[in-house]
Amino acid sequence: MSREIPSVEFVNFQDIIDIIQPGESVLVEYRTSYVPEFTLKLSADYTRENGIPLIIDDNFDTLYTLVLHLRLMGVEVNLDHAYVVKTGGTHDIGGKVKWIEFHPDPRVYIKNYTNASAEILENVKTPAINLVLGLENVLMIMRDSRDFYRLLLSLQKYVGNKNRKAVYLINRDIVESMMPGFFLPELERVATTVVETRPYPTGAILTFKKSINPVVIGTTIGIDVGGIVSGERNSHL
Image (cartoon, rainbow, N blue to C red; front, top):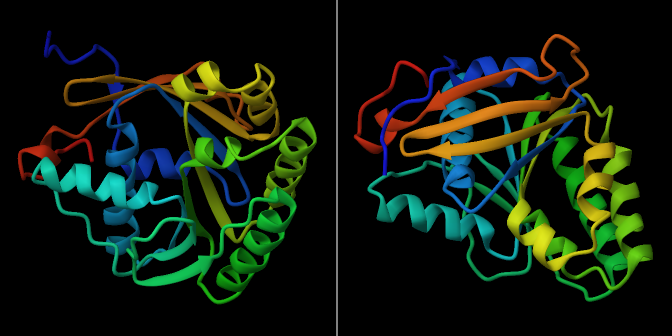
């Protein structure tokens, strides 16, 4: 496999966060890769070092899986400062964990999640970074299109909430192969920013397919994480 670094403008993680405005809901689309793992690592380091609250929506132990993968790569991630809204699963990771009991009826799940999320947002300095993990797992419990649109409506209600900058990570391979074709386009419609990622051996290329900032639309940038893997801080982080 070629290890050539793509010829694009490279930025650090703060540059990307600065593009996102308070109240935005950002959809980050990735295919099978370690994009979620390093998004978690970068988010945790950035928020801890800058005193910014980090809220993680952890659906069905996705957070545990990402942390385990990072550890196997020799990369540690400190989440002691993170607030975690946890649905399903068994692994307790994070500084303050708010458990939501899984319920097979999506209407009950949405209500429980809304209450738990509101409680956390009321008690943190804002705007917080809200990282949503395992969204495709939530979509898989939707029984029909009505359940999906109930979930979509609940996500839409958070758009404009300036207490947070929300980043939803979603695996396109899973969504496109296992779910109705309208799921992803509808999620893209509700999102304020849509970012498509393409990994390479030591980082990822990001293309902004949609943004509330017209200057950003169509822009392609890179972020390199080679310094994290090697144990050194990279100049592009």
